[in-house]
Image (cartoon, rainbow, N blue to C red; front, side):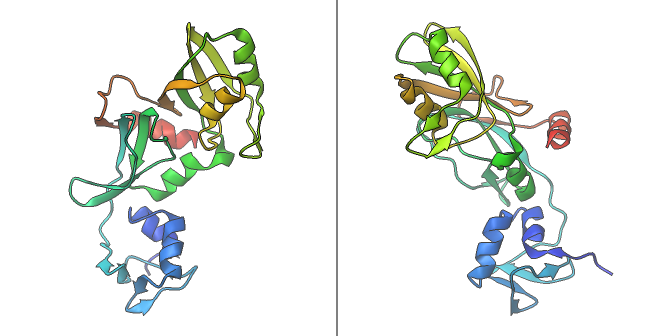
Length: 226
């Protein structure tokens, strides 16, 4: 007998979409199972005929895709096709003005686990600001602060001066435009912001606008650390 799983998990594992998006598609009546509109929480197996938005879902085993991209400033990340057939999407956010490391995958569950704020996974950035970096400024950043516009508190973080107007910061949360807002609260303006690491995956020497496949060793450690 075929093993059954929830429909949203099945679609996520097939690289069709995230679980949340799968639920939305079901709610909108865009998912059919064996010719009948799917219902929320329904269980399916690879023996079922599943159609999403008019396209039949292949029952073939999906090859995992995880790539590291060096996003240039000015580019907005979105879903894409990889090698002509696999749909991949970015893990988490990196605002338009920022550059650096973005992970993209066809594994919806992996994307959810890395992005989930409650998991507190490390992300490291190099930041340049418009004034000299002082210990007083870094201490304010390290201790955490209240961001009035988000009505949220930032968690304590690691900050290290690396140049006259440059510092590294390691965050375990991902509030909207967090680093820019934190700097502004301290009277500084961010001039450049580059993400150089997500968990154990480093940007390294990937040319801007290019990507590389995450190695098997990197992937195994990433899964172990989730």
